[in-house]
Length: 456
Ligand code: PLP
Image (cartoon, rainbow, N blue to C red; front, top):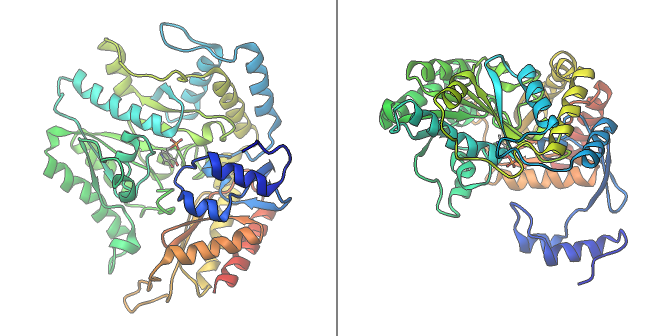
């Protein structure tokens, strides 16, 4: 098949179906429906190959925090491409953008983080976490501490280790996952597990599952606990306020490393620079990706706290791990421009003080809609649960038999009406760019109401 030379939707779709195996996709279904072809974007708005304009309430894939079309990021990439498009950071070499970004990351992350290990994506970042925590315990003379505890319905990526840390059972079902030494506890999802309890009481109970698991595995065998401050891909599940402080207490009690996966929550999404600040924890390691470059170019990594960095550096020996693109100079240059833009536009403060609270107030009003069981927001990430009836008699809603189908129907209405939202299980979720204005929150809410009404 010849490559399409014009923006003819049908020919792009045919070439796409013939040659491109998309991630997380049923290939036959896609071939029948045909891909949606996004050709351009500016600010919060996408344009497709039919000329339709779409409000991107998902920031691409939770990435484009500064919105589309930011000239300073484009210029940084072009400049660095000319200056030095690539050099590696193996074999005692480095590049100015990789060093400058490391310094900047040390400034914007919590004070325990003075070191970064670069990767190319969130998944590679979490693979690094697995290698690094095990190396740490080896260096401590406790090599039997191998087990990493994570949560069902958490998402930590798609590589063998990332998908194993994640708690997506449909991913485990393919490819013999999880890999050894990873075990899961239930997620802190009040509606699913907390019938008859207050949110706060449930938060303590859900954190208690970590302690139970530690005792079951044996405290001297547990290396780390990893979680997203707010589960993103699992459906924007905001944990009760009591959950994370109790998790921190339990990790401290058993001397277990705490890893915060900030791939979605980092770089302002929750109204602080990092989700751990919103949730009140002091992690030992922090995975990042997506928002570090606003998705303009791939970059990920791990912020390494003093406790682990000290062991890696002072106890010596080579850490046998790294990627060709660790510290890629163009990606680092874009990340520097991105972070400086977040700072100069005061995006974190805007999410914390203006758009986040405003979105929360508008989402609270959605609770009156007959299709909505509950809504949750945290900064500029939000979810609404779709239900058949609001109360099944115990204060909890009655679910649809196939909530995903209802969600997909709603999502269909979204696309037809110029809105990109995502359906996850019984939830519709959003994570719009952090440059969203109050007027754009109103525009978004108008679109959401319209799409929900059409789904009724
Ligand atoms: N961790 C979290 C919390 C994520 O949401 C994701 C991706 O959505 C990842 C890790 C994996 O990142 P990547 O897709 O860049 O490998």
